[in-house]
Image (tube, rainbow, N blue to C red):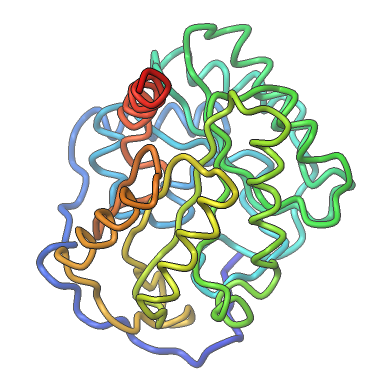
Length: 305
């Protein structure tokens, strides 16, 4: 099923600058990771969202598993995942995810999903089952979830929080002014409230969020998003360059320079985030295993100081 974005006319993506060009994947390990995902009937956001880092990550046997199918009930203007009527939830998916985690010997796994507004719980219980089964099969693996907003799904977020993932990630994606065109099915303050509720209900869980830049946002708006996230006690912020997946998606307004990313990172650290990743190729799950280790160190240092 193809993704059709009716929010903007077709616009060819501008030529990428040298600092965000990546090589095509060629390593044997990349092929092995791809074959395992096919064998276990699993989807990954790496493929579905056309992530530029897939070659590097899969070559190191790191993959972000996308549960609840590969068809989303929303049509965000930035996202390459297909939109339409999803298939039924796969009852074997938790077992398959846990098996993949064990076979890859992951120290840290990121589990995300499509939006499932068609389900009464938004897919929350499948997140819980995946967490529980992964803990049973791979007890030494730390777990990061990257969830939908569970908008109007009473008790859904609470169920995932009670399952106690090590990191609870939910991306704001962009500044509030751009939500009507870039993320029309979501509400900015609902997403902020979700992140705040995680910390309020279980302060031991690390919280994380991310945005894309290059969509037409102003620097002052990015600073305000940082302040909003710190007010919600979010620990970790990611900022990356938006890349237009197809001509039917929202166009890139500009390519943000590495120096500007460095400035964003400096400002975010000054505002109190425990960890910041802000580079053109930064994505929510990029180097998540390494970042989790850094988060633990940063929290320990903050508590000691």
